[in-house]
Image (cartoon, rainbow, N blue to C red):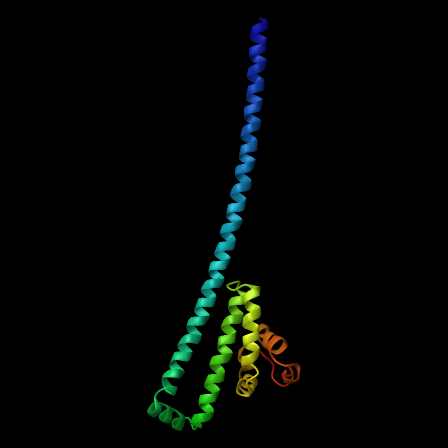
Length: 175
């Protein structure tokens, strides 16, 4: 009889121990699954941001290729500028300034979307400041800033422009 009681207690203890082990294992499995899901969510967010940056780049690149095609074809350039009553040299400078501004936009979007790190972005910002130091780019920015997002305008005007060159919001709002 004593032997049966000990076996019964031992069986109960074993069942409790196995239940505890199974419960702890399930908690660890749940924590691991939760971490994996969080990692997957971050990867999906990064992929969406990357796709957005790539789409924006494709649009800017198509725009650049279109206008480079006109700029690099003298007869087409002459026909286009004549048909639109444009001075070819002025229009050429405007397009180059536009290309440079759009290049800065792509770098900015890649940073905002987490495609490039803040360390690399600091080097990019130094190059972008040089771009916005060009008078032709500054002049063109005054005309095109209204088509850009408020965030990009703020970045350009607070991070890239010398303080005396900042366009006041009342003169030309971004949106």
